[in-house]
Length: 291
Image (cartoon, rainbow, N blue to C red; front, side):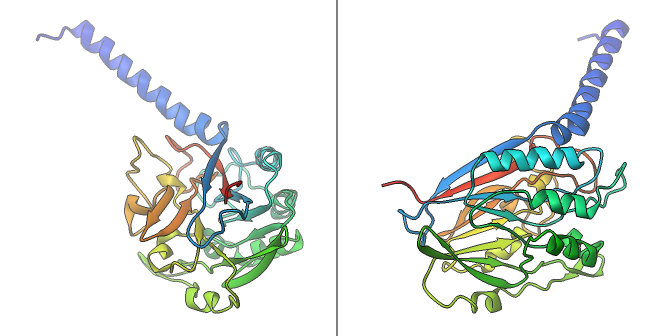
């Protein structure tokens, strides 16, 4: 078929216009305007079916303007509180470190805002790789000053409506950069599990999902972030995932060998200020079911 110059120009303009529209959406609307609540209802092995627990998961906010300023965090906190969770967990990477930051958010500001999340069992946190790589001590101090416990290979026994469970917080798996693509973690899963002293059900918080290959069935559910769902995700596939397992652990509810993990798509941006096909999300996990 012969293509006229006019048709070629018209088609080219259409392609350029469409590309510009997608780029504008990915670079402004999805990362800075949209906010999803993604809900999971499950009763994983080891969790009693009549033990109802509602967990709000906040992952990878990467606070900084233009997309994760104080007003945006306030919106996320208000949306989280409206869900009336029993427990709020923060999975790390609290500040943005990419080159496209227009203005940082003061640490005492974002920490105070996350502390305004309301839940009977409190707000608990772990640190992510970006927290370790940039401004580790000030970030840890900001969380502590806001009254948010930072868990690092720690085990905490909580009680909800008279029933106990364990919350484990794993140290970061990429904490120290040793070279190009070479990292040394401070994670100690066996040591953390050794702090569990009874048969109450166990939940694990881990920034990176890769630890899941070593998680035993004793842990009912692993909650992870880090990947941002690839930050660009189309038709259930992410071209780039910061995991040695690629799309296997990129996003969502993952079940392997009778073990369960939920990987949040997170809230902020890393490397580049774009999100496409994986809008910022608060994850709401409902464990157990009414009888």
